[in-house]
Length: 336
Image (cartoon, rainbow, N blue to C red; front, side, top):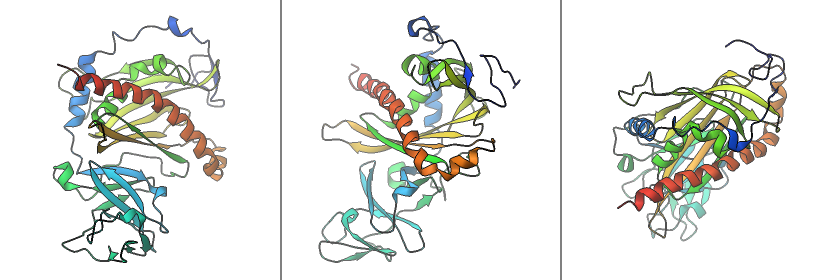
């Protein structure tokens, strides 16, 4: 990509570029480009990808050694904890004695001590209680649920390319009334960006999209040029690609511009039905930041201070995008 210093490009020295903001209503309409047939074809292709039955259920940092962590994946209650060596363990949340919630248990290295009657669970698997395969990639925690996934299992989940140093990262979790496919469909519609999120994106253009037929691993990506807004007239222009490594994940990776190599992984994990009988899905999004600029080392030093800011930005976007996903689900559920 050619280095430019005018308002349409980016400088090697100064990532912030000045641009002339358009009035929201004066943007070029994108509904003709956002062809429902194309979005549906891309979604259908993604849903046929293998998953190995792996599900993201939390950030890696949420699982500690001093107390267990409870979650629900596809209606299956799970409990997770770390032993003295910080190894991740995951198993059914129901105590095999009388069904007590082991998320309230006490951690004793590789075992959990149930608070109802003191039963020790987890030190060894048995016919009554056995751990699930789990995986910790340093940013996210995964569990493999073969009965739920129903696919040929794999030893580890498919984790896309990330920066070698993942120190500067943040994980945001929200819950929506929808199915995982609705979350993925939202991300497979990049054309809504500057219309639906004008506070964050400007001058968005989709420069490459999958075909409507014969989608393959080689041609399934979306390529987008966009300016991330910092102020009304200042922004950071980048080029980013959107790809699906599995049926419940979509990854945005910056391929050119400031922060090249940084990724945003959006994972959609089914939780099961809520009290109203409608599906619930957890959106677990990991942002892993990277920059080749020498000053980025300071960001590593204050990564704990940056995480709340990164989480705030992601939460703001997903509050809007969940409305999009939930609307898709509502229409589908009420279609005659």
